Image 1 (cartoon, rainbow, N blue to C red):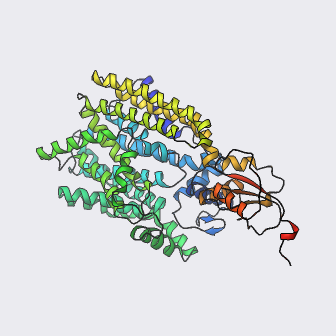
Image 2: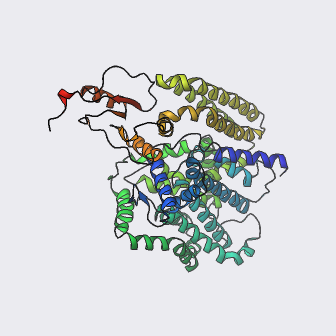
Image 3: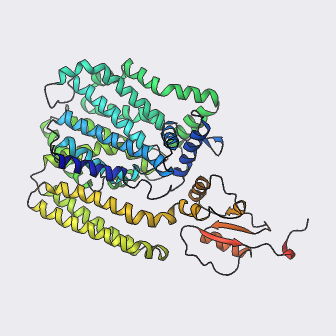
Length: 543
């Protein structure tokens, strides 16, 4: 690979996975909650028990908290400390599928359209990778652990002759069999530290699904070799045992409640229809989702030729499909649950686009996809609330225009059967990510994150008189993180002056309680600041 191509590929991956990690503050209920735990771990030096507001919190295991705490110890800004682990996890997953492409499909890494280069680039430019590389959650570390474990498993199977080798070097790889089994177990152990026993279930389930198709149960059983089991236990078990010893309710809360009950019952109120993950997976693969069509065509060809039993593509497809099937049965469904499938699906999409390079359809469908995304952006800009339209409307229109121009270039090249359309699409994805990070996310920040509001009130003369009232839990967690303390809920019977942070519906309740009159001067940006005057003496309760 020449220097220019190498720098361009590195730039695309850096922009899509690492660009502008701090462009927007922590959002939603999860990011500030996990951030609080990681910051507390760094401050207290207790690396065993995750604590939220001083109390043990066992929703997730400890790997992500360790990674975030290290960021705080390095004095990184909060958003970078908490999101950098996810970006590094996405990079690890990208390298895993690039290595798989090189080992199982051969070729060099000299050009963007070589599989070992294209597969990581496709993954890094998916909606899922771009989004979750910027999420202060354990999901990307979990998915990266599974990707690395499955890469090790695929190589073990390749050494056994169960998967077609791209080169005759498979016999030499048997000498490294023990190391591969140790790596397989160690990466599964990291997955168990990231999100729990689901790592073993997803990796094991994908292998079982492959066995059901191929009947190759003997090579699959080798993955349960004592080397792999011992490695997984050495990595994961010490923390689990130590946490259980210090916290007798750990097993009940984490294993029984946050794993079994979450999967088997709707106790966490995340119910969705059975088919929920189908559109989520398709959305996660944008802008490359249309490449699933040649994947299906290739699968039908392998089936007709009866050459699918030793196909590495079948193994990767089982890895990509099983998480979707497994969590479709769950009573709790969240979009992040399908993230472990995306590296595998990105890999087989890369294989399909290379094998169908002489066809018009991949380039045409990718170009049309970008055009549709541009139209969706325009519709979104038109439907923005009035308070956001002035700040965001014009920038979203510019992003849509960039998408349209890129779509036109891709379609032009595709019609000429010029594979450069892939380069244009990758560059377009990176360009839009950079534009969004520079121009859109900072403008959205006040509407979705408590960071801006906490900075605004940092110099308040009476911080003890700042209250929350009827705020969604995402705002409560965010304000607590950035203030460094929980904001108390304002009681309407409180006779003293206060600054109350609330929503429009909360303001209506305050008006009905006759604690505020008149109109607010500031524009609504996610939170309303309501100044509460003292309760008139005639209305104060008699003591």
